[in-house]
Length: 169
Image 1 (spheres, rainbow, N blue to C red):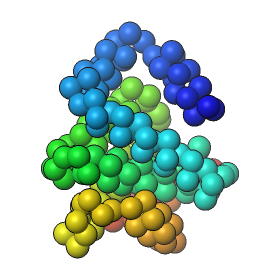
Image 2 (spheres, one colour; image 1 turned 180 degrees about the vertical axis):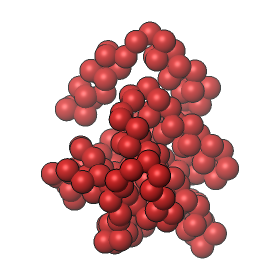
Image 3 (cartoon, rainbow, N blue to C red; image 1 turned 60 degrees about the horizontal axis):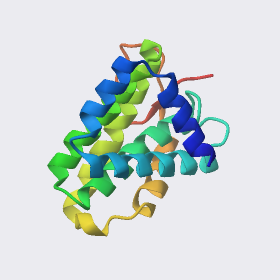
């Protein structure tokens, strides 16, 4: 119930222009929209459980949450459509999230980078596993292990290809 309250309050705080922009992406793909919402709730809950102190700020838990979020969106959408369409939708919805709810430039760079890590990780696993057989557990443990090599993003010029990034508190 708390999750729905958060989402309701978030939508309520958006301008009409932002709501219309969001609807322009979601209405043509209602199944993807529902699956993405489910992925969002799942990723948030798991990140809160694994990283209770940093999942909701710019710490290491946030990096995990963004990568996991994209893996889950990809996993759920791939079960009903092609990986290419799922990837395109995932990129558009996660990029739009950063546009609709702007952060400081370094925070945005971090979020977009970690989203890409999640999408890339899913696509890396795809050839070895039929898309219908993906499960949440495939991503959780692996992304937790990737946290061991996560890098601290200190400025906009930093590039940590292949590594999750987070901001120091």
